Image (cartoon, rainbow, N blue to C red; front, side):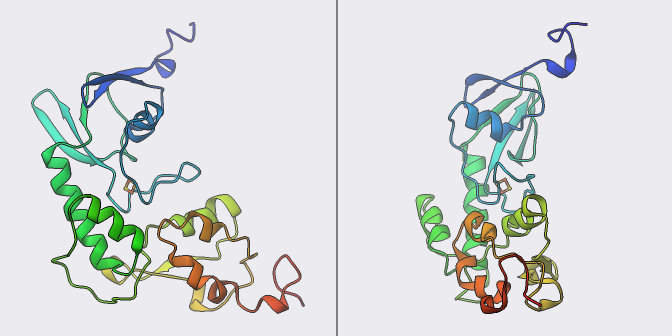
Length: 212
Ligand code: FES
């Protein structure tokens, strides 16, 4: 069978905002949109990491026949003849709601405030528990430490609204090599302040883990 006959190598034709596009096998809607330079806002997505779908900012409306659904574009692959809309009224409503939740979750983040303002969201109806919070718990830092650096120096404690970024057992740990990857992928800058806590006492380091 030639590669063009192999279904696994066939491109998927669909539309984004009325524009005909083609996805390579394995591409998500977001990856296809980026390939065609069609903007979809994202926060938790990073091309070097497995998509996790935690922020929901990348929602799009996907219509197939009479059915339509709002879904995160970073997680979902397209199908033939799908119609995707990146800024329909339905999408904008969900995105504004997501931004209100994010404003409540990390009210001190300038990045989130800027993003929210771009969608006309300047306040939130949800309860703010910590006015100083900048971390949106998107999971990029945990994922880069785990998937790319491979040391698992970070984790999430608790669940739902109580979810909090921490080190395993909540103590500065030997696993952290101080590479700073977590800081560089953080979309809100929240980790810069926390880095010293995570790394522990740098004067005790040899350059790779703690000195003995
Ligand atoms: S970027 Fe898709 S859910 Fe966060």
